[in-house]
Amino acid sequence: MSKPENVTLRCPFCDKETINAYYTPPMIQSSTSRAATGRKTILYQRGERYEILSGCSNCGKSQNEVKKALKEGKEDTEKEKRILERLKQQGIIKDEIITKL
Image (cartoon, rainbow, N blue to C red; front, side, top):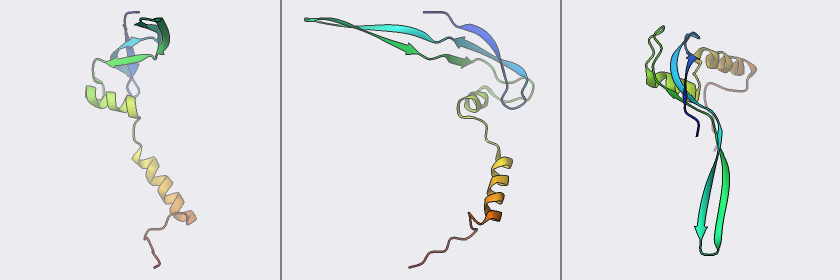
């Protein structure tokens, strides 16, 4: 098992390299099950992992905010508003819901 190494990542909010993290590279591990009839070894691959150690010192975001943004992605509300306006202009989305019974 390889040891994690200390790396510096880019902040998803201000795009500067200020976030400290541990990086664990992908690795292949084995698991052995034993029974009276014999044993069976299964190989499986573990993916790479990042463990965030600090928040951003440049923009002031906390460690939990940075973790969430890197895991789920940053929401761009302005882009979502532009897309909704464009769909409303094309007539795909309407402001009110009309139901017929």
